[in-house]
Length: 184
Image 1: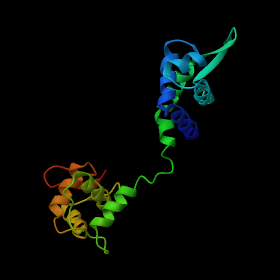
Image 2 (image 1 turned 180 degrees about the horizontal axis):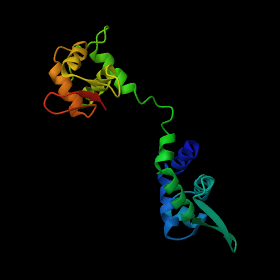
Image 3 (image 1 turned 120 degrees about the vertical axis):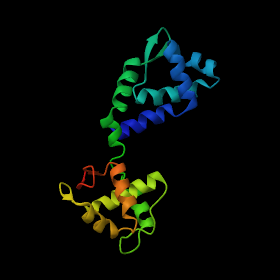
């Protein structure tokens, strides 16, 4: 699907082709009419129409001596529906490392031993660091506040801030009144 997506957007990525699509959305035109309307040579308009036809956006029908081009509105609607579904958009990022930003931030804020140099003030960076810190806790296991502080001490001296932020960002939960903590 991503190759089809790229081809579709490439076909529409030219200002002249967008004008042609806009005109054909109003009514059918011949090559000569389109050329006169947008100020291009008929051969150039034919080239643009061929690119649009490759992705199914336009088609030609014969009318007397002319080929009259029409916008294929059904194809346009169908492609828009397919392109903008979550599944299809997801395939366009299949080869992207979604953890790359977190890795960069953690590398910037940690020492060789894995402890934090500082706690980031910027929200996005803090969130990345917290996702790193929460890995020190097992899922499904409950921890006393004392044990949480012992684990957090390995990351930074300010265990209260780390604890509060882990809960605040929804990475950990706790029972009220100094109760147990657990990783979400």
